[in-house]
Length: 287
Image (tube, rainbow, N blue to C red; front, side, top):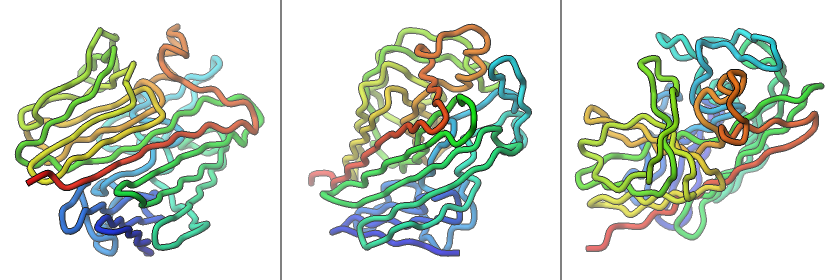
């Protein structure tokens, strides 16, 4: 078990390479920005503050990848759900390539297996600077054929009294009881208090920016991606705000005839790379 510590001014971050390169905690002073546990006390990635989503985000329905006319059974990795969820990287140990007090670079190599049938290399950087955490995530297709990929992050922001979330979008994918998307409907995004918010949807046409404020903090989340998964309800003490590259279950929706560009699905040729960026900027609430 190794915890990497980053700090810059009042902002500090603990990272666990052995737990899916997750962020164990992110704090401004003593105030947690994300759901936060000191790195040495975190025992499962499922309770972390954030983790990278690679080589896909959210769910692949019933743990079966349908690609180029072939069904590939995948590992059901989120019992009791029947799906494959959140990719592979969050379940693996990442190698530390570089680390200093403000910066870390991590890498994860995957060879085809029952979790994902295409080989890839992934890298992630995290850097604290100017009151923000900057992240990059990249994937390179190392298989001998074109492969579908997706990227994103799964941060859990603390839901405090007065929490309010706002962002602009153009559409929202409705969800069935099996937690898979059913249809896209027009949506302008959200501009609402979080206390009674009940949402578990992927929004598309996202503007690339989210504002989250409460009695303690003002947080701005921005990313190079155009889709956003938001999850919370009245029983949760967090708001998951997840920049992602594609719609939930995108690869199987494409197999059903939906257009790849509508879904955000990326297909990489052998040796091709896809990258994404996210920034979490934090400041104390006025007064």
